[in-house]
Image (cartoon, rainbow, N blue to C red; front, side, top):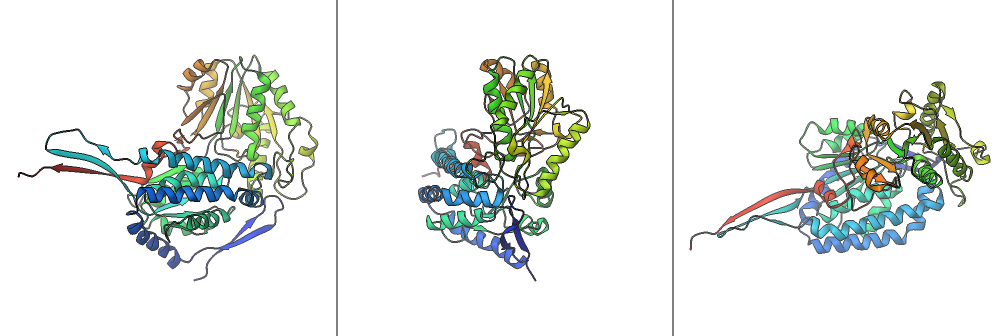
Length: 467
């Protein structure tokens, strides 16, 4: 049987940059078999040995950050000036999970009782399948892979066809760090139907997926034919509320960064902006001033702030959201910026766009745009802002901007999202649970709760025999 050929298209040039090959059905089956065989040995390794392997691997990852960053720019288009930061953050995130792993995986003692010993152990679940996205591939992969390995599981990773080298690099690094053979494996796949074989394999004991809502639902449906846990980190339509008491210039700069960084291609990018009417006009002017200083262009130019979006299809979606809003009465108040008007001739370049007079009848306020678009809606009160923030099928993150942090925390209690920021946005912190509400997913990564997916509980109940 022939195997598929998978081609990565450069977002910057529109030309092919890499080619990889998928696996046959027999080869896919063998991945699960070898992962199962490796698990039988790896689960018996000491926790300290696993910790040392992960520690060495994170060090090696950091040492290669410049080379890895350049690959990211080539494959998914992030400006080179920001590429190494993802690697640095991935290492820090992994190091935090490493630091808390002993406490997170520790046995739990039962109630003391004379003549009895009771305790709960956390056992590894077995081979884990991790399917991860292209937009922050190292960060996303670390979320699942590090706790999975520390807990004693074997892992099979499938990268996005857009960023195939990430899986290859990571597996090579862990091999150099001393990870036993077949504990960490990867494969390439560009055809969703091919994934069915592994998702439904009884040898796979946990499935982790990061991607679109449609993709997550497809994985869940395929997995529903057997009792296997599925963790889903899906889309967002993350709102920000700017209260009237803030420093307007500061808030504008923060919001533009939260909406435009990585060309808006983050599940926790700011995609809806609600501004109190008392400062609305000043806020718009401040955003315009910030945008005048941004530069759209070649991501290999270190002066570039905003590169291309990932694909022509993504660019078409973003443009359709903008066009729908304008057709329904929104105004485009994007300031004059020479680079916005004359991007590179080839590639999927979308200029940052500022829209006002938007409402929830517009696609740009209801569906995930995943692009550098800032739709701003005027609100009259905290109550109106919270109601509109919650008027969404998504619930990943939200942010509230105010000098009254205590009141911000009170408002945050009413927001339907897994993470609520006060005076910050677009920053998953490793000491906090990263979890989606509503259609933004299910399950948890990061924090001590991020280990729970990768273990199953086993209770031990010992009674002293008569002597």
